[in-house]
Amino acid sequence: MKKLSAILLVITISVASCATNREKESGKDNIPSLEPPKALDDDWSRWLVGNWQGIAKSDFGEHKDWAKGKCRLNIELALNGQFLVRKGQSRIISLSDEYIKQLKWQHLSDSDIEKMRNSSFESMEVYTIDPKTGEITGYLFDSLRCIAKGTGKREGNKEIINWVWSGQGQGSSTRVTEKISDDRFISTEKYTMPDGSAMEDKAEMTRN
Image (tube, rainbow, N blue to C red):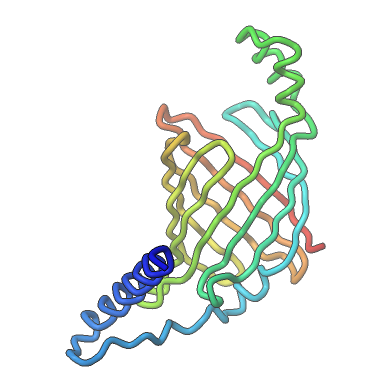
């Protein structure tokens, strides 16, 4: 019974907090409204929902195609349609000879390099549209223990999100997602590291 009471208390505090914020914004002194914002129902959000698969490649500075991988995305609406949740999985399919030479120069063993060659990667993004500003806002988490906060906008057939990385990751990035058709998009992300070095990832995705 105590556990149930504690859970109900947390829920009540959460609801009251959101409702109080909305009351302050409206300047009214009556009972707070529990009515949520309108669920995401824009063309872009509806189009993105579904399962996607594709090929990704990465350039680091002058090193072209140093890593290539296959990737999958599942994008769905969550929390009563208030957020888009994007879950990604990818695995490396090739490393460039130049990159492997660099790894050996760093004294990595053949078994370590083989483990890297067969490694996989996961990520999760949760984002929405700020009802007051129309700006995209969200967070990204990945299996390298990186965390990023993103803000952005949509312009025609493009979505542009700027990410600031923390946790295991550092620096910033800008991702441009371009809708090519109902069943295809291209995503390009350019990273700037704290030391000024640059990396660019590009993925071409098709709907399953």
